[in-house]
Image (cartoon, rainbow, N blue to C red):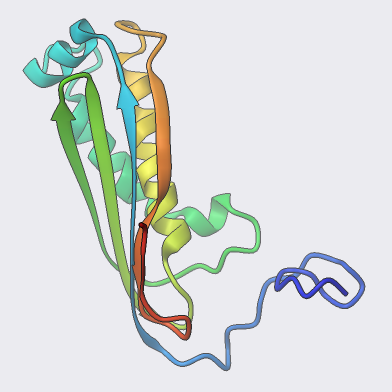
Length: 156
């Protein structure tokens, strides 16, 4: 009908059949950022936020999110994830999050990396919202992907 992979000939939603695709090593990196007040950032840096260790909790939340992506995103395949890494970097006015996800399978892990980065950022917001309700999450995007039929790609 439309040439879209998640629609059948009648326009109904469907999960793409990846059964005929080659099993290859695949990796994706996604990132984003949360900006905040100096007070909120200082509390995160010092580990004095009332809810506890914001960065450790965000890291665990991102890892858990990557593993549950197929439960959150309709038509997304459940994948045997080999590894998830969540890097958190504090800068002058916020925290940058980078999520890296790897698997060996028949489809890529872009959605897992994007979900991991997003949930890590949302966790930072949740844990620090008492200090700054005006925090802003932005720039969430795919930064890199490797493997699969379409090959490697890196954000410009």
